[in-house]
Length: 338
Image (tube, rainbow, N blue to C red):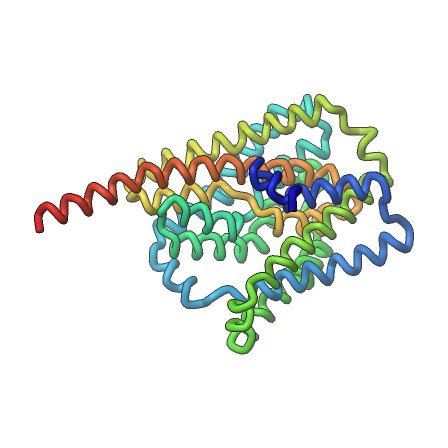
């Protein structure tokens, strides 16, 4: 209890602590040999279950309602899969002489991932933004990312020997798309149950990612990951992630205002267009970069995930503080007129 209250006071995310714990466990007790094979199989099934549950929860009605706001959806889609990769390639190219090849490629890879679901919607709600649009944006982003992210990897990273292969297409189809599609088909029977038991999806979501982190870093430790990562490289990677996130946040804010969106839509665009999904990214990296040091490849994403949560929490509170007086003033004016 004391430890939990201390983390609450320090605003430490227990999930991040768990991820760090998996990295530490893999560093001390990495799985290898037959153990690695077993863990890999368990992890693959956990990821398939995760995407099955995603498919079962995604409401077709909410998707159709959000699609009608096509300008906002298109803006978020382009920010996620065009603007972000362009910035990632540019910043990754500048940092390449200073970072290891795996870290620089991992930085570019994270820029090609879909947006988060839970945190994008949560921050939009806290900031008093357009929550239905955020639900649709985040959901469609994750659905599109199953196809778009591998295609971007093949198109933009082929020069680095990380082109998209038919084997990767097969694995993504089997592990991600088919379970998701099965969840959609069975939604009429399992959807309500999943809505009533949201904690199950949260447990599978976080548990599967912890499994992937452990297996990925176990492989990295076996191949000498910590002997190849200097402390200076880690500090530089942290700085580069901060610069990348800052550039995306500023650009999405500027674009949403330039295109004439109202404040509620701007909030949805900023939070949905600036996030990158750890839940989708690590499983995809495990498939797309099989045979390489996945532990190093996903390290930029793991750092970015925590940075985006902390930064967006501050921004959401500022948005909320700025919109509350406006609402209060409107209400006060209405009362005076009455």
